[in-house]
Length: 637
Image 1 (spheres, rainbow, N blue to C red):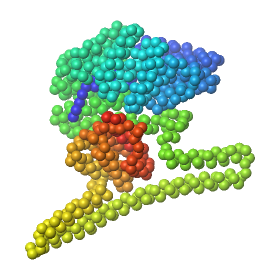
Image 2 (image 1 turned 120 degrees about the vertical axis):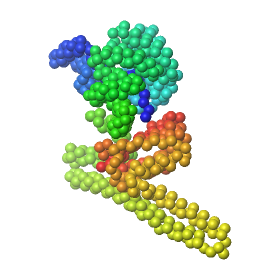
Image 3 (image 1 turned 45 degrees about the vertical axis):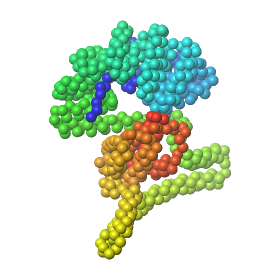
Image 4 (image 1 turned 90 degrees about the horizontal axis):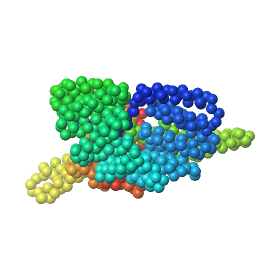
């Protein structure tokens, strides 16, 4: 089991910032004042500004209520045609969605803003920044860098120092995720320089912390410590206790990595005490996990379990999944060291389940985001999730429905209305029949494949074996060389028959189910010197037979594509069943490809056909020299 520290990482974790008590009282006073102003205000422009001010006050503590004010202000500004305030509302809402990981919703705001001609260079730079960060969230790193560089050029042209420093940091973040540490360091250093030139001490501190992580990743611990301590001194002088606690934790994790455990414990305790002082439960949780890891490295496993219990309670209250995942991993290691292998196994299973849950949730958010979050904005993005054929059918039917409404509204001829009504009903019935027919054909195909496979294996295979035995038993008067050649040919033919039978319907799939069949499929990759990792969760019960076959064929086709084209060294296959939904993730570390230039071959066409039958969805994430990841979501009910 591989385990590493979970010290705070400003690139990878979303911190839920707490509000200081004095700030809370100040906010309450401002909220009361704004509420009174809204009740009395007559000017639409001022009402919009009040709603935006409400958003600014509530976004950290009451995000849903803040969003409601923001959308009200945006709606009014669009109704009265105030483009300046509309752009401001779109910008705020775009970053609101982005902060919650909803990149497509953020990009919708970008597209809407691009349609407004009066947008200023400063606003355009901000929307380019938003677009770049959204593409980064979606894993489209090259596009992200392109947009961020455009934003940088615009911000530099108008001498917007704070924006330039911020963009340098974001470009560094993208290169960090691309594992290009040298480029990430280059842009962070530029960001620090611009921050110092413009007196942006807090921004400079954040970028120094990022430089600390780069140095740590490169193994330069002295440089990492120097960067963290510089950030710590700035945050102390600013009275920024939250960032101070984070810096203390980063230093503690650094000492833990260098095995200076007493120093590590000292800094981690200081981080925990400071975060308790400001009641930031996220940092309390993270510092407690790291303290538990220090005890583990010291061999104090019982003390580790006590700390993990505290961290688990906090993480559960926060529903902080990355922390829970790491906690279960630590539990598993501690129990294993104490000889309680049953508890170790149970917690390792929980660790795998949470790990899969986090990955699953990230991708399901991307797939279902428009349906869940856009509310009244049904938009063209939702339509793009339909297949082209279904889209054409729906559009045709929608046109007929629209014609009926128009005819009714205009006093049209009743016979035409009735005729069109019957036509629509007939068409819908026809499509339902086609779907039923397709399902029947697919089921028949599976049944027939099983029959042919059985016949090949049982009948023809037995006949070939009998002929081989007869040849072996012939008298010595016959030409033994000819018999040996014939026997060898028969044996080869028999093997080929078994191979064809197995490919048509793997015996393990029929007898033992999908998991066993896929396990065998991956084990066969050893002969190709390919490392394969298979993780599955929630698949103790069999899936419907026809669906098992189609799912197996899809995975088989994807793995064949990897072995033929990807030049990969490792394949990872994850299957997770949750709430009658099967999520499949196949990742390889191969050559990857450019999705914009890659055309669908026979393999992808076959996969799409099977997914259509299963009513599933899939996405492919790949870039040249960065491997490929395929995500499939298949309903099982």
